[in-house]
Length: 204
Image (tube, rainbow, N blue to C red):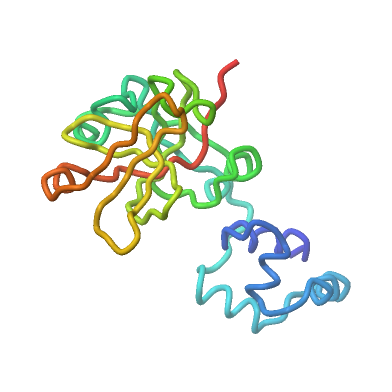
């Protein structure tokens, strides 16, 4: 196996952004990786560590290089998504993982959906009518752009947890729109995070 190809496959499978990040995981300097390339092999202990954490590499299999993403053409971020998701039949869109990584900066390929945004509350970050990649995940941090379901209505907002309190604030990027303050038990109970916005498809 060509050493350059083997390293590339390991970086992809481990979802490392680049060789530098891979070298930090391997606890070696980048000069050591250059030495591996010159010697023509990766040390067995590195391969064993990699396989124990990420599984065995499978080469020359295009199925490992692409992913199907659910496109909900008739679902908009204004309402419906998340509450009737299971009743909808998505269009399967096949993407090359390297394309998603390089163009959309997506490195985690699990649980991705695409829906359309309605409205201008997230201008200039997200424009009316643009499609967004959503990762269905509830582990969010302050400043993340999320899809939030509140009483069946969908909102695209920035998430902020109030320090030392349980209340949550959802902000628009567009200053013309007020914040949504989830500052009571009833409001929190009606609130659910559907996913995190990972990237968007620009319209021209």
